[in-house]
Length: 448
View (cartoon, rainbow, N blue to C red):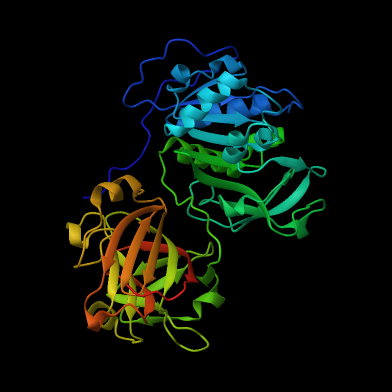
């Protein structure tokens, strides 16, 4: 069955507590999500902090979570932190927690707590290795406030799914002491040619996420200016990061390196794809492919050789409008007949309401997904999901939003996965399924 929609219910009006919020833990209702905003500074103090607190309060009031705010590090006790689904470090600076408070926060994260770092959260706790890993990178320097272009790399994560591929805005753009790309999932990066003062040699992450020692972490380098917190796009960016951190939205936050695009949202990249059978896919201005009609399939034909793939990791982002049907085909021979893929390949299904062996994450007709894991990982209609489909020899594994939900081995010689094509299905006139950012990483060939 379809996983329940993760839509937050309305909570009490957000409260701002300027003093300590520690003390006996409040009873947490089943429909209440609480977020703590922490903005203590022991170094430079940003004058945008009040605007930041107010913005998070407003996001909570409309998004269905309660907000407390404090600058008292005494709030960092195990008992008090247990009240919160996530803690937002809002432009904190310097050494803001003592050893006992650090230990309490470490335990909180390891028990599944959420962390959101905003701007100068990277200019915090330089001598605390756990925090440095959680934040992802430490601040090094910054040029003057100026406009720049942010390249949005992940268009499925709730923090970036609503942004244009190129996000033009003004802020104070941090340089970092290290590049987080190897251990965190980069959501957006700076185009260093679009402004002056970037020092990261052209690979300049500015927002990222990760699962860290049991918890969820999101960081954005934006948010220096007061004006940021009135900017609709930035507010949506911040809200998406909070929703991920508290577990109300799912995303694949594993590091992602070494992929090349098969479809990057442009008409040029679409020229390598061929429609088999009836129906079609339409390409929108924001680089989204949406199905109509069918039963057909859009499949990739290598523009150089026309060859298929043998051992690879295929990633793509998808979204359903409602109770819709589609799928991703792998391991089929080149053909303009969509039934060739059905009869000679395998389909990783998209349809959360079908029977187990024909539902989202299943290898259609052959093996169900692990449904409890699938249900926890699945975002509801209207929100983006990410598949990784990994083929090695005759083994096919499926990850949904970073969670492995299927591990299948083909034993049918007529459906060998060792050399085949990939495609996306347009199922029928009543099915509206969208796709973005189809990319592949070819892997060393392995046997079973």
